[in-house]
Image (cartoon, rainbow, N blue to C red; front, side, top):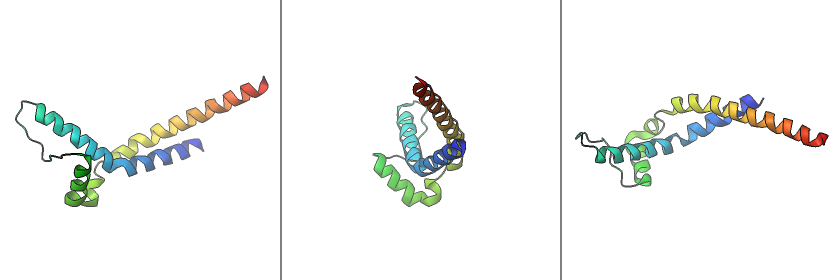
Length: 101
């Protein structure tokens, strides 16, 4: 059951935070492109996080906000499932060992 709960929680968290991660990644890429000497420009220039989030939502729409969401869900769902299951298993062992003493 912990595997299912962990996978569901990880998938939901990854899906909901995808627009935030998208803007964060674009801010990082634009910073690197400004510093690079290759001469390539990024197709987006954001002044700050909120302006980037507004731009993605208004110019690219809902589909643009969730670009890459499936990849994030496929990464974080198993990760969260294993993490929660491991933590709950060791917590149970720890509680039982303390109760014996």
